[in-house]
Image 1 (cartoon, rainbow, N blue to C red):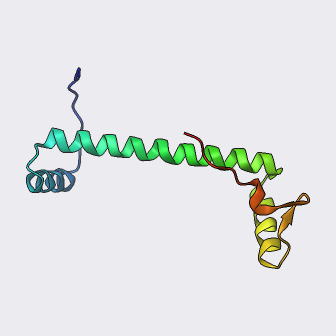
Image 2: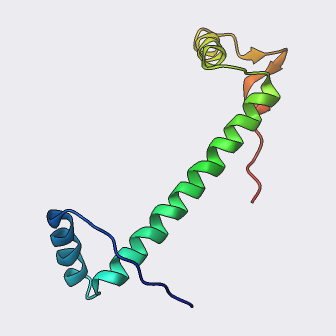
Amino acid sequence: MQTQSFNIVLPKELVQKIDRQAKKEYRNRSELIREAARVYLQRRMDWDELFAYGRAVGKKMGIASEKDVNRIVSEYRHGKKVHNNKPLLSWIVPISY
């Protein structure tokens, strides 16, 4: 793995928290920050994928706005279990990875 060094400026209190956590985990500061960056980036990618899936399903259902979502949820809660003549749950398809 190639590495690159760079300088960052952090609030003193944050550095102290990082150092305390690194000590608890028997790591150095760089290892802890590397892991924190990896976890953050993976979570962001997971959320981006989830939102893309939601947009695709919404588009397939003809949902164009949050107002449409609220209307469909309200209809479902009040006993109307269909959208565009299809059962609401039939629109949901498994996520493929």
